[in-house]
Length: 80
Image (tube, rainbow, N blue to C red):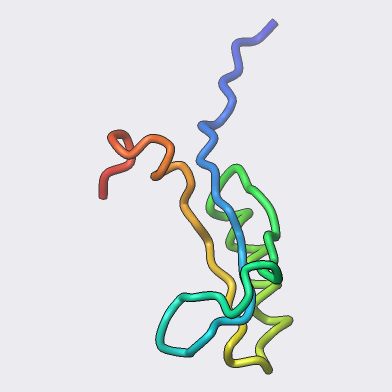
């Protein structure tokens, strides 16, 4: 059996929703925040983020974000 390494998991969360104002990142209603999902790397999170952002392009106050969870879970390893 060949020794194959799995790629390091760098968790990313994609969330979005209507903001209370265009100047900040405060959601208007936390009960309506769209928790899109968790992704194992930035590339897959970005693809979903882009799709969601394009679906809401007509709503200026609706924004989607990629949260780099791996940086929160292991801040010493992911300093930038």
